[in-house]
Structures are given as structure tokens and as C-alpha cells.
Image 1 (tube, protein in one colour):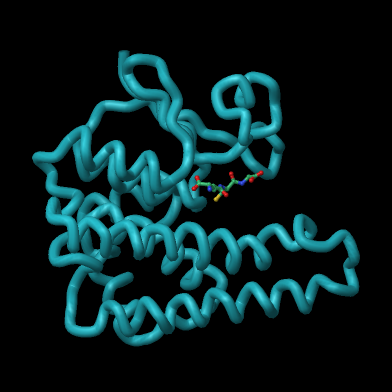
Image 2 (tube, rainbow, N blue to C red):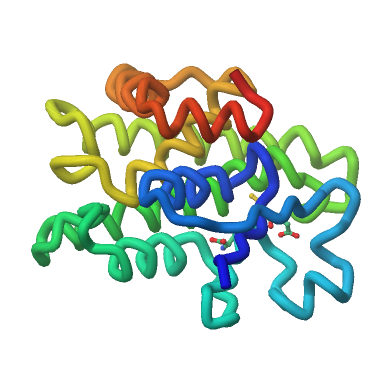
Length: 206
Ligand SMILES: N[C@@H](CCC(=O)N[C@@H](CS)C(=O)NCC(=O)O)C(=O)O
């Protein structure tokens, strides 16, 4: 049975989509329409009760949720692709960056910008919540910028952390948040990868 990948074009699942295609794995893509509330429907909640995407239903039928867990599992399950450095220092650096991109830049920053009503029901507070989100995102990229100085990828060669960093860089690009020098170079380096270009095309972007 092929794996089933539950995704929404242009969302954080794009990072996992890139990893699946880098690994050249067969999978069925299932589009979850977030604006239409597909993620809240009983059919999807039966697969992922958290109602989040991405979800990867593995070939044994078991679902895996959370970006970092899915990325880690893919890298460990298919080690030949070397999506993790494989030494304690390199692997720790990958986890550190992936957690910061997903947990902080996305989870604390971009969510305040994209899903402001989850933070305050009061329309009058929206601008302040979004400004706080932008501050968190900009601080996050400043930190990533220092970490990327003098290197092409987060930890030597392309890893699961680069896919996580890529999707938040992509969001910054889409909503006009300027990326600092090394993040911009990293973003363009990822965009030049044939797999990334194919994934973006498949998700409806150029
Ligand atoms: N911690 C989760 C967060 C995933 C997440 O927030 N996904 C967003 C789309 S980028 C989502 O599913 N939003 C719908 C919701 O939370 O209701 C992960 O790492 O997978």
C-alpha cells in the first residue's frame, strides 16, 4: 500500500512534500482544504485528531503527525538519501534548526499573522497581534541568518532542516517580509533544486 500524504498546497506540508520527492517515494497526495474546513471534518479527524496538516499515513496504515516527527522518520527510515548528517553534533544542529523554524518562526510568528483570530477575538487587537508575529518572524530570520553565514545548508549538505527553513522562507517571500542576506541565499539555493521547483509547480506556484 502506498503512503498517503495529507497536505495543503503552500502550507507547512510543502516542506514534507519536498522531502518525499527528494526520497523519490511513491505516495498518494490527499489535498486537505483548510479554508473550507476539511481538517475539522470527522473523516480527517479520524486520521489526525489534532486536525493539522501534514499527516503521513505510512504503508502499514499508521498515521504520523507533526512536521519534525515526519521529517525525522523519513530521514531515519530511508538513510541512503542522507537527509541527516548522521553524527550527534550534526543531527543536533538539524533538530535545533527544524524546531526553531517550525515551533518558533512558524508556530509563534507566522500563525499570529495568518490566523490572528486564534490569538484574539477582538478586531481592535489584530494589528498588534500581527505586528508581534512579524517581530518574531524577523528575529527568527536574523538568528537563522547568523547561523547560515559561510554555509550553503544548515548542516553541511541538504537535510530535513533545510526543508523546514525553506517553507518559512517561502512564506516570508509570499507576504513581502524581506529575508536577510544568508537566508535569501539559502532560499534561492533551495529554489534552484529541481525537486523544489517540481513541488512548487505541483502545488500551483512558479
Ligand atoms: N505542530 C504542527 C503544526 C502544523 C500546523 O500548524 N499546520 C497548519 C497549516 S501550516 C494547520 O494544520 N492549521 C490548521 C489548524 O491548526 O487548525 C506540525 O508540526 O505539524
